[in-house]
Image: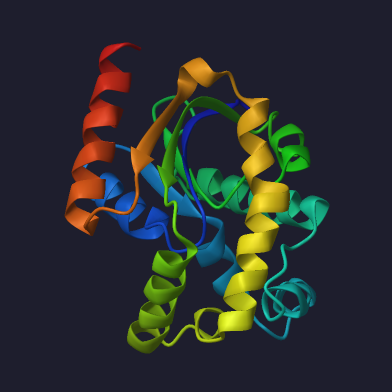
Length: 198
């Protein structure tokens, strides 16, 4: 399979990755791919569905190998149905890779060109955002403060280490505490700058 060029949108839960990712995909030629959306789209009664539910309900990450396999199958499905052209399209990945091991597991599928990191310094901001999102979107994994705190621990212990696998030169850090519009504008500007240099 041809490696697909990709940029990552990265940050803790509630940093606005999904919102910014969707807006970037709507205003650029990037194809937004969220592992959360992929996972939520899997039938809960299927083997993978049960596996995902058993981890996400505890605020834990789905095991690396299973995540990479589901991701690869999904990508192949997009290519097979002409929804993704590996020679022309660039992916915007949101939610993968989530661990240093996942970086290695997906490196034959995608070629990461740049990483945009939405940084939020204060956990209270994240908790408030996720509890609010739970009310609006009815997402169970956002409604329980103890699960949110577990997810933040998982992020710090496993996901944050992903950045060490990429050259600092391809990483742009963006203030995620600002309003959603400001965060989107800052990310869009960083993306435009990246495209000019490539």
